[in-house]
Image 1: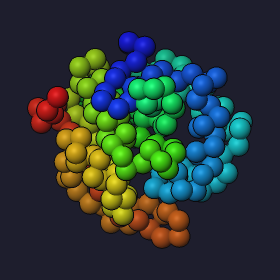
Image 2 (image 1 turned 90 degrees about the vertical axis):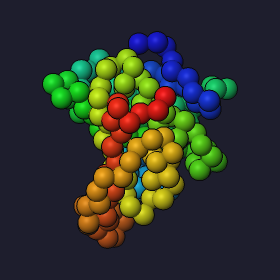
Image 3 (image 1 turned 60 degrees about the horizontal axis):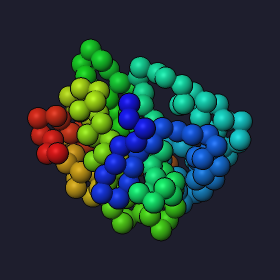
Length: 179
């Protein structure tokens, strides 16, 4: 793997605990940053996040995790591919942009595009799947702009912040991808 994958606004880089850990801990305990994630309802302790980080930094054939940095080197989030199925060449994906000032400004969408290029060109995958809470309009717009298409809505899929929330399932196939 290259040391980074660049887009128009961001680069995806390997996780580096010394550079990325403190932000991860802060963002995972920020109710606004985790509003639409499945994590964040319970406090994330330093020990819990260290365990997660240590696992995510180790080579694993079923996942790839990146830190998202601006082209100027500012750490603004994380993204990854999870549950990679090599037989079927599919995976699930996820993204978080932590600082409010970087949300809704195209950084997340650019990270999606770079991650997609990595998944298809480097890993040789054929299908990416992701879910977004239906109420999370910025995430849904970014996914669509990055080429994902909505294929289903699952009513009341997750309990989140006091209610069962609908989820929209998105996919992007290699055949439909427009690099």
